[in-house]
Structures are given as structure tokens and as C-alpha cells.
Image 1 (cartoon, rainbow, N blue to C red):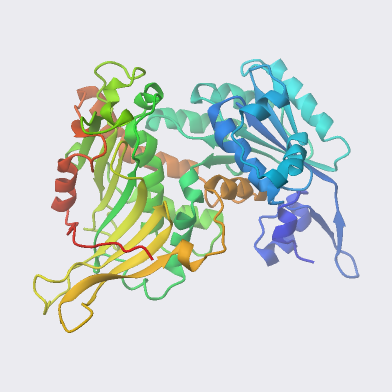
Image 2: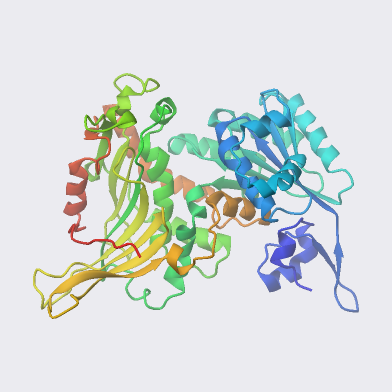
Length: 530
């Protein structure tokens, strides 16, 4: 009787109880069916389970706008483990009814009773982040909810500022760990500001938790098209012989937002666009594009290959980077008329970049000589995140000056799609080549499928004990190794970013850098909505 993924999504017993079954099913051994072996057939004995999901920082924006709405969607979809209790914890004194009013949860008219049931599974505890006694009080509340359960698991989501991570995790370890089940911790970025601060946080977390208890969440790893990358690359024979330096000229990974800091510039100014987007989200995508084929889809084997990619990337140099900062657009409307420095929460004279383009190199046999261009920015002309894999020019071209490079484009957001730009004959009498595409737009191909939010996928992964889409400590250390010298140089020398108008493509120097490294933007391709 093998452990199943359905069982795993409920509640968990000791891993040793299911070792043999896990080997058969590929499960990680954490599930809610206890297997006993005798002379007869294996018998499954269900145990009463309880899982407590504790939202640390329940009164904050992340909890109200993202975590509670995600938990509601999982509850509505019957995807939460049976017996899950949600406990909010914060310094603010409030009733659960007040928390409900503040949360941004969308429910249809016919879901009112279901929403009431969801909130009935919630409770709230107020307390300090610095006093051990407050966590003992939280532990007492959790034990009350767990009364009568054979197995009681605890999951703590740290929706908190990094300044209290160490204190909170220490108190959880000392006063709020589960005595009869697993305990897991979800940590939100930023995971430090540079190599030293990140290493300090890693040392602390590893002193109180094991690596398999720590889930460093990067929501980009939960996106549909990011997770599609592994299947696209390793389940299609057509791409395997093409995916290398002999066929690919350049790769661009972009993240564009059409809005500015929207009054949150004070927080953003502490980190800047490189720390906020490039060093984590875009670098994670780079790893999945560039990694070698793992032995299997097991979490550690995928993460091993990602780390190998990062170890092959030299430190980033300032000469391979363009920095920008948006200014108001006189032709714009509303917020577009205001620049970054017009945000009253931004320090006067700040040189924090809101735009960056960087060229990374991977020094290995597959990718040596292929530039990986990461580009991200705020207050740009559109909202878009995508990967562009541009292939080399056609050798011996018999249509001189009329062909364009093939591109495989993977649009991560919005309107998820994957398409290959190819040359074809212009329809009709003409024999002129024109650009077309082999198109897989998700909303057309999968009409009746609702794609889950990234946080839905990732929270389910944590319940299931799967770390494939979370960041490991050595992976984090390598990412900071690549960017820390650049970041320190920018801050020490107060490098002044190039100004670009709100609503533009960014600094023209960015396009010049991209062109210098061999990526050709023709501007002739026209996307046609289907």
C-alpha cells in the first residue's frame, strides 16, 4: 500500500513509518498514512492529524493582501490538509473580525457560507516579537487547537521585516516547536543585503533549524511558465541539441513594471532594483534556463544543478551594467508626471537605481560566449516579464538582408504564452520572407483551465514537504557572491543612474549595451492577437 500524493496533502506521521512506500511513490516520506507490515498484506492505519499555519506579522500588508487571500483560495479549492487551523500573530491587538475586514479577499455571492467557514478556522494571538513569554503563550494556543490529534504539525510564515528574523526564529525554536509532528519555517526575501548579511542570516537559521525545515520563498519559482521551463527543456527532444552556444546567440530575461514606487519609495530605496528583482527573481529564471538535466525531478537534484550554474558565473562588473532612475514625464498623466525623487518617502538626492540591465556570463562548456542579459525596471512602458532566446544567424543565407533571427519567447506574465518566431513566405504571389510565429498562448490552448497563483503552488509545496521551488542556502550564497562586489562599488562610489522618462523603454544606453553583446532587436515583428 504505497503512500500517495493525496495522503501527503493531508497530515503527516513520522517519515520512518512510510520509508518503503516512499521509495515506491517518490514521496518524501511525510504523509498521514501509517504503514504496518506483518505476515499478511500491508495495513494502513489513519491517524488524526492537525496542521497549524501560523502567520507571523498577520497585521501587515503581505499577510492581508497575499497570504490570507492565498489560504482562502486553497481552502475554497479543498487543497488544505484536513484539520488545518490558521493562526494570525502580530503585535497589534485586534479581533479576528477586524482582521477579516482588513484582508483583501474576493468571494462570490454564493461563497458567503464557505467564507464564513474559512474564517471560523482562523484565530488570532497578539504578542511581542522579542519576548519569549509571548511565544510560550502562542504555543499554549496551538496546543489547545491540537488537542486530540495524534500528529500535530506547525508551519510558520515569517511575513516580517528582516530586522526581527533572528529574534522570532530563536523564540519559535525555544518555545513553539511541535512536539508531535514537523515544524517548517517560510522566510520571505530579502535574504540579506549582501554576502555578509545573508551569510549571517543563514548561519543563524541553520543554528536553530535544519535545512529541510527552512523554505526561502521566491514567488517567481511558483509561476506557471517558470515551472514549465523544466518540462519544455527536458521533455522535448527538439530543443536538446539546440540548447547551447553553437546555436544560441544571446538570451534576454526581462521584468518590466509600468508604475513607480507608489509612495513606498522609502522602503524600496533601502534595496534598489538589483536587490529587489535582479539578484533573486531573474537569477532564478537564469538558472532554470541554463542548468544541466538533473538525474530526476527530486528537489535536491534540481537544486544541485542550479547551484552548478551559479558557480560558473563570474562576479558582475560595473562596465557590464547600465543603471537608470525614472523622472517625471511632462506628457504623462497623474503619477507619470512624478519622478522617483518626487516621492516624499525617498531620501533627497538618492542615487538608488529603479532600472538595471546587466550582462552575465556562464563559464562552462554549454554556455561559454553566450551573454545572459538581465533587464528590469519600474515606470516603464508596459507590464511584462519574459525570456527571449535568440538563435544565431542563418549560415549561407540566400535571402540576404531579409531574414531575422529565430527567437523562442516565453512570456511569464501577463497572458502566459510561448512562441517561436520563424521566417515564412509572405502569403500570396510574393516570394518574400516575413516573420511569423509558432504560437502557444495559454488562454487559447487551455481555455477551461484556471492557472493557480504562484503563492498557491508554493504554499502547497510547503505542506507537502517539497523544496524543489525554494532557495537553498548554498544557492543563495552563490547568488550574493555574483552581485555583492558590484553593489558595494555602486554604493561606495555613489554611481549616478541615467535618467529616463516615466513610461519609456528605459535608458537608451541599455539598448546599446544589449546590442553590443550581440542581441539584435529588429523592431519589425508584429504580434497578432488570436
